[in-house]
Length: 195
Image (cartoon, rainbow, N blue to C red; front, side, top):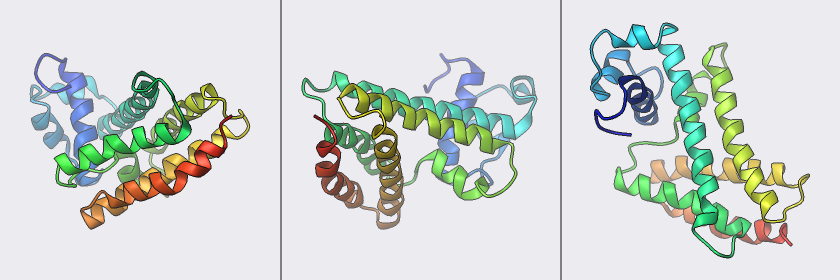
């Protein structure tokens, strides 16, 4: 996504997602996003007439889509898919990202929920959509592995919730151990739900 080869609008959405991951919504300014994206000055109003709320909303949708694509990529990594393998795949991305970036950036959905989840922000609908997109991708993969359709949504919620909590603890401790722990502890339960 980096580089000027992408259109300025796409770069700004991506940059907003990255800055929210590191700073949260309140501390992510429009000027910071424009600078991070190396976008032309004055382009923000052109692309985002709804202002910062529109930009953050689109960054959240991008984040949910990215998470869903990562989940869907699991079947390309193994010939023997399993629910525990899927969960390990989800955690691996975060382990790599957190260590490479020195625990600076978490999940933009979690950062936004922490700040805006309890209020009346128009961004909340985008946050809900992004989270549902991610969970739906997990449900689809679990069902594809043979998990009962009525069981898969609960497991998806458990997986995403455990992962988000582990990301938070990993950042606090500056150690990926919590990610390893949730994968180890949940794997038997997850695999017991597949044929």
